[in-house]
Length: 121
Image 1 (cartoon, rainbow, N blue to C red):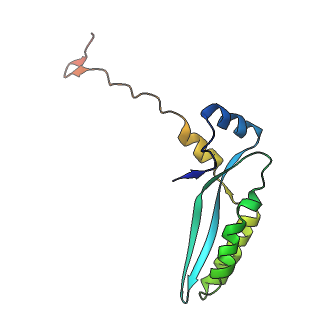
Image 2: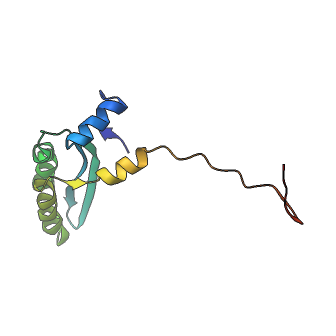
Image 3: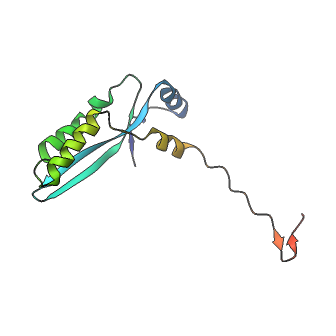
């Protein structure tokens, strides 16, 4: 998934921003078509320390406000849920993203064996 807001940061700058309180956030929006209602997550956004996560999520609340109400019965329910999530600053997915950014340790090769036990090199 694409992360919006880290395009101009190198790894060191990103770590500094995370230590200052930056976080990765996903917003929610809802679109209804008569009896069909779709609740979807946004892309991942990096919110720098000092920036408002609520302001960044306003566009998704606006989409839900304009297009989410019209499906019955889930349209109003999902729309209100989207408002609650977005006006609460979105869903913080920082721990998941940071864990996925850590390099994997190299896989160790299993020790060679024979049918009589381990083989000493």
